[in-house]
Image (cartoon, rainbow, N blue to C red; front, side, top):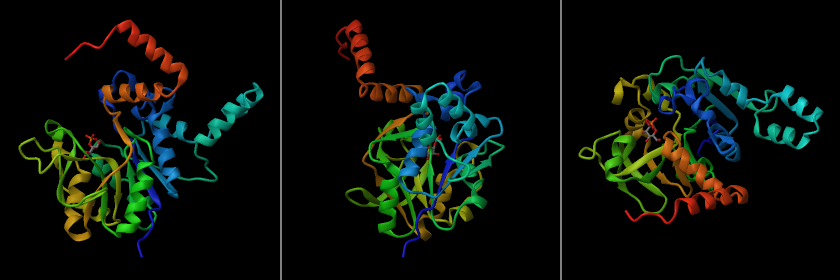
Length: 296
Ligand code: G1P
């Protein structure tokens, strides 16, 4: 029988240099898409998927993450006193509770890479496979990690990574899979390489920030030397275990926004604005002022 996925790891220790100066005092995971911080989407996705324990791998300078994630009783009490019970209730349901949720904050003191960040969670995970969610990959639509956990539980053991096709000239921004077979949502893979050049890329099937990983990932991470960019790469540890435990790519159904980039975060905001009647009107006004789109 397949073990169930009980733990989700959120690597959130990065410096967010691409968004400076906004990220000088605000962690990039708290940057909002309209009024919802990126981390909230990730938490909701994990909660909807039914994971028991959430581990945030963060950095001592990013205490705002913990303040945001956890329930703030004082703020809610003040809102109640000011006659805003609805707002207080919304905050309560979005946050995690120290008494009824299983939440761990682990520290990654040095920026040694995504693999190192995941390794920092090793002593806190529950037995069995683990989910990893990168909050700056926003995936809207059906909960991606929930879809993946369902597929994982059918497929058996191994590593399962979310994948989408990218333009060939973009392979050097992603982990790239080496596909052996598969149709539909599940693709069999025999390897994965971190940020290869167009010439070296085995395909243009890129990994985006959702993973369901066999528990042996921690053994492979512990023995990983630094890889691309001098960092300990999650990709390399996944590739190291692929032959032993199996590796599949999962073509998720939702729409992914690269919110680690300004264009991606802006696109996500426009997308959600289009679904809000008041903001959609602003979009219409702006495009009317800009006039008809210029032909390329
Ligand atoms: C990380 C991973 C990479 C993956 C990407 C998805 O890279 O290392 O394999 O394709 O996330 O967003 P980063 O974007 O942190 O450089």
